[in-house]
Image (cartoon, rainbow, N blue to C red; front, side, top):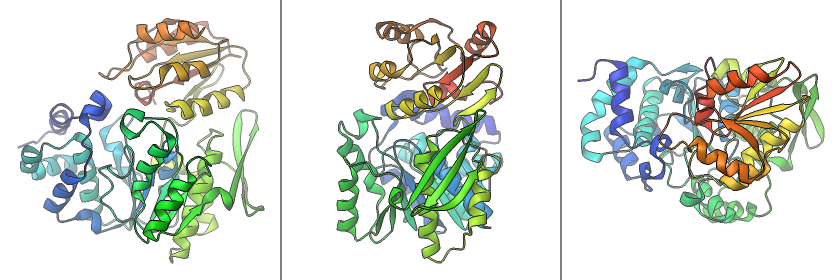
Length: 431
């Protein structure tokens, strides 16, 4: 039926509801389709061990760091993440290698009768594809990143060896709830009976949600920040991390390629997860941990996390896109040494635009752009909101044109930041 990869991909993009294109209309808030697809495929999710990672911010970085550490320790490791930045195949990897295009074609052909019958979403199909691929290629373990929420996310048909929840913040409130407690409750849906759960941060307003759910299910719970502490050090624009366990130095001057100081919040969760695995009989040495962290970008191909694209002027992009993510981005920008800041900003609809814009520096000059997806917020609308928040700038719709425009006026001592939306970062040439 399908013989060409691009034809297959076009079918997936155009015939299946896709959240990154159309938003909430693509979501199906139950697991019935995923369960049915997995049953057709012979329950592939039961044929490999898994680690399940949820959270508002930090789940992508955490998933990639865990996968890299497991690879360094010698385990054949699957990694499922979303959305992709450049290529669909980024979503599904084994030991850092993206899924083979031929496998995607064969899978869609194999599952096509079920697609016709169930009318699943794009995400439901990609989850089933990932599980099928990991089972077929016999991974030892797969790190599975939740797409949205937790309990009703399509990935939540797995029974992991450990669950990880990174952070609770304001995002997708129309879908997950209008309080942090409601959002936390949905994320807590990945906690399984008797399965250990690691909470990366202590957040007083929501930690009781996780404690109560874990207690009800008999699940051992640990708060990573109680044991591990990570401190970012910056020298000549390069960040390294010192990591402590119960106050004792564990790693000094760890050269993490993920240069955002906000990784201070993610590293404890990663280390506590590794500790939990070792308590279960896994064999992950401090050497494997350090190697996995220091080689995470080379090992997994992770992009867009405080990624430096150029110097003189300093050009940085970051996929932080919700209120808490942008707080961390602004904090990181403030730590940089620059003369003038040029801020290339694009957003999608459905975000708390005014709250985010209130965070942004008024002394920057803005280029307002928009990603080439239906959910993109119109650049003219963004400019209007920005002006109401005393932000000065102009519209340059295409992100790459905006980068060129900023470079044309920037001096070597200036800084250019690109972000506001994962999809804006995804369209940067050469990323």
